[in-house]
Image (cartoon, rainbow, N blue to C red; front, top):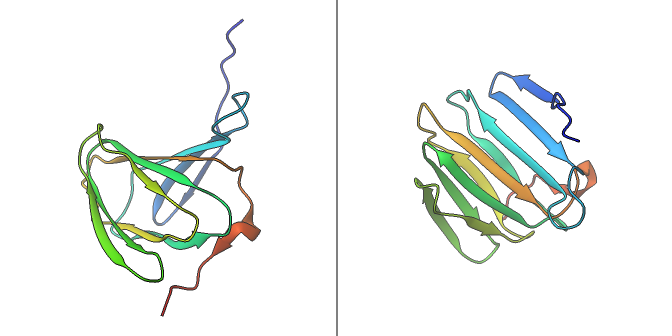
Length: 121
């Protein structure tokens, strides 16, 4: 039987982040989306283990990637585009359009010890 639940939402000066994790058996372990964002960038980290798939189903944003060797900027401006990030990809999301809904799918549940916030030199 279907069950309606309220998803946990965190709000700060950068906007709202809604998380759902461990709702599905196997596969994706965590999903979160960002909306009602402000002018500030998001991200600013890489991971030890987590691989992410990033999608903008509504709106657009730019994503700066640095893997320690190469730097690149990607534009997510279509719900058909999906950017796959490896753990070593340091990322910063910015330049969000006003209506952006930014979606992230992760192969791991949230673990604060998995985050590396120091950028590559």
